[in-house]
Amino acid sequence: MSDPDDSAREVADLPDLRKVGSRRLLGIVLTLLLLSYIPPLAFGQSAGVYGAVMDVNGNPLSAVTVTIYDSSGSYVATTQTLLGGDFSVSLARGTYRLQLEKRGYEDKSITFNVPRDYGSIDLGDTVLDYGLKLSVTLTYLRVNCLSEVNIPMTVENRGSQDEPVQLSIRTPAGWTAGAYSGEDEVLNMTLSPGETQSLVLDVAIPYSSSGLYAVTLTASGSTIQECEVSFYVDKTDPQILTARYPISQATPGSTVAFDLAIKNVLTKRFTGLVSVVLPAGWTGSIVGEDGSGLYGISLDPGESVNAKVEADIPADEALGDREIAVYVEAGDFESSLQLGVVVVRGAPQPKLSTDTPYVDAYAGRTAGYSIDVENAGNAEGIVSINVTGLPAGYSWTIKDSAGNVLSKLYLKSGDSKTLSLTISVPPLAEPDIKSFTLEASVGEAVSRLSLGLGILGYYSISYVTQDFYLESTAGASGVFQVVVKNTGYSSLSNVELGTADVPSQFSVGVEPSVVLLLKPQESATFTLTVTTDADINAGDYYITLNVTADQSEISARSLHVYVKQSGEVAYIGAGIAIALAAALYLIYRKYGRR
View 1: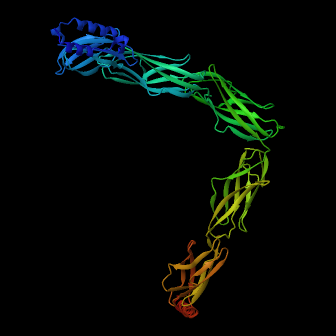
View 2 (view 1 turned 45 degrees about the vertical axis):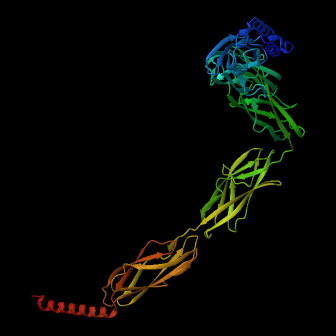
View 3 (view 1 turned 30 degrees about the vertical axis):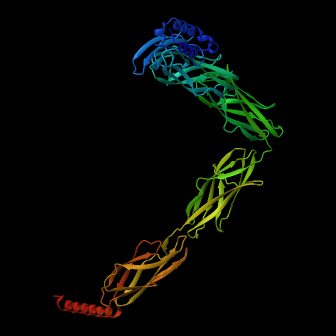
């Protein structure tokens, strides 16, 4: 017979059925019935262990394999959960490890202790997470229509078996979406245990969308996993049309123009109509790069063309702000661009420019400048040209491309002309740098251009003396003057007359030895004193003359010197000649008649 105390303890160990959930009631009842039929000797040899397995949403999991191992790791028993997720097993006193396994779910181990060989032990609810995991990094986005969104996503297998997975995406009408690995769309995959696949969810949002939408991503394997991404879509212009300068000023009676760029910023080709809406009374059109009218356009993604809006403003148009609207209309979208025109009372505005603000010129010559004159204002005008700051003696002229001399010119708004400015440099100008200003004015509007002029010295020296001939008597001195002139436009310094190739028995002196400064158009006289020895033979002799200065020199000239005998020598010669003639006469008389 059993011990009454043991029976009391047994009753005390039994679970209170009122506290047990209905989903495990059947399992508990079966366990109690089993224990009630165990013989008294066998009753003390094992305890009833029971529990339940659920998913992360609290739903019972059936057919979960429950494997029991003892503390040494040896296999003890195996069972499976019932429809309600319940399981039960009888175990003797000891420490055990319970292993739960089901395809599509994570494996889980539980270590527990059976403290006695009788009664029952409730392990409670055990939750198995899904083995297939689907996740996205962003779940709510605010985007513009016609945009394309890329969202990182991962698919992970946390189970212990290979997991075939099929991906599908549910989108709103007109939307397109796909899961991509690089440029390849992924529809199916097989994940090994522990493998994670990183993908990109690409979602394209059409122009017609506006408001709140949801895209659902589904991964179907042993279990089905879903992720939802919410999009709040703002209705915006796709900016097919752009203008770098969307606002312009113009005057009544003028033409205003805007440069446009039309670019397909979408992900697919579009074909549409191009139109322009002008203020009342205005005329104009949109023209392409070739100048012809532009009415329709078809562009591939990323392709663009340039165009121009031209509008004629009536001459009686009132002052104020006006708007021009340009539209591109395709089947599923419309893009517009607003252009602004400020109609103002016009005023010309001259503008001067040049690529050669500094020019060098020789004294006595001219310097030329190429000048661009532009009317940068918004009205026509007559532009006056003037030069200020030139020193006395300098003069200037302005000519157009046809060579006409002018001091005024007519320019329409936006027009420009190239003029030629000529500065005449005085002949006596010394080397220097002169600064002056070119002015263009229309009424109170003035443009000034600073210019520079470098004066280069022009050096030249010439002989005034033309006859280089001197007669001299042997043993006497002859004087010859050489006159030179500064025929350049700048002063010469250290002017000297040098001699070379002086014959023997000659001596030559030069006065002055140097002229320190010879100004332009002035002359200098050098006096040469030529002395010969008394016994020099009569005849022609030559002396080389060289005139030099620090800045210039002149070609060498030869001074022709004719030396004749002195008077005493001539008398002796004449006497000898008379005596010789008389001797010849006497000889002739004495012997000639024989």
